[in-house]
Length: 273
Image (cartoon, rainbow, N blue to C red; front, side):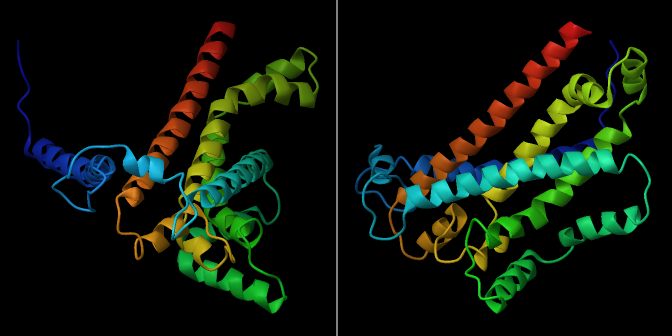
């Protein structure tokens, strides 16, 4: 059996990938381990016993920070962003399938916010709200700030999806007597459903952990990323690591749930074909 000789580029990429995994999962592993510190444990190694004390502490009254309320704000804000992201991205993808006047300008205006520093957008939205006598809040100004970050990604994803979508399926449905709505409902939507779930998941996760665009727009009440940041200068116990572990597990659960739905839809389509 002939074995191909590994090239120099292969080893360079292997080392790069190993470093990438180390930088990505190394800190997460450290936070996960330290969240199980004993009751007398600190913020660093070595561990002083093993316990679930700091996870229980999350549900107790805190001298600094309000985990539950900040989590609920981030969760509902993420849901709001996800719904709008999916709807607008879908409509934009459908609209840009046909050429119309101003399409190029509208496209560049949509994606322009990706190249503007997030903190500048946050500051600008906060100033505008103050000028109009409105109080910044997580459900208004922060909601708009998050959409400036998530919508361009959703639109670009749907552009890619519809760019590969063959109109032959729609033409076949119309030849069989289907109306435009029936064609969309029973042909187009089931085929792009996995992509829409991906857009929704992308929008939710980007909003859930967004910090810079929330900093000047959340108003009086913090979202979870702002709450965690504020705690880093005040909390001196591993409860901070326990919170990081819980939020990380929640994020992975959302991702796995979305992937499960996508696989289920894929199998359902395969059976129909």
